[in-house]
Image 1 (tube, rainbow, N blue to C red):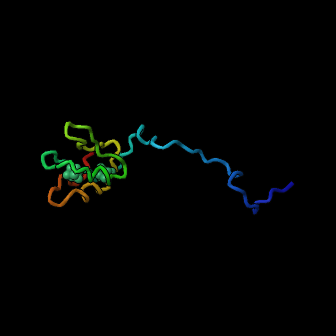
Image 2: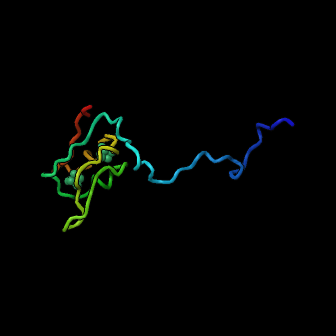
Image 3: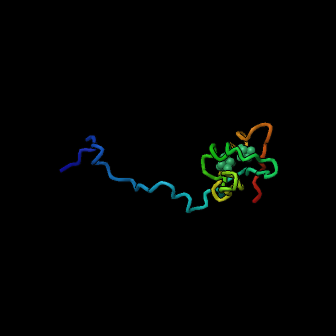
Length: 103
Ligand code: SF4
Ligand code: SF4
């Protein structure tokens, strides 16, 4: 019998496309194609965490200090170099600046 290629499928009839769990990118180095990198100046940083909130790749590293959560640097294994953190760091502080990636 000839298959009807115009037949509309219900959602339950569509084959699964290989779903993966959330958070699996953490296991891989996903920052290797970056063309720019953020440089963090720990002496200027006031630990407002704005960069951490805005980073789309969770690549701003933080840890708990005696006075609360503090930034400890950039996770270059996962940073894509988008520059959002440097853009969002307060103008009066500018503890993050972008520079051309060194290979
Ligand atoms: S450059 Fe982009 S990906 Fe990298 S730490 Fe900043 S916001 Fe995150
Ligand atoms: S936005 Fe700037 S000042 Fe605020 S935590 Fe990040 S690097 Fe530090």
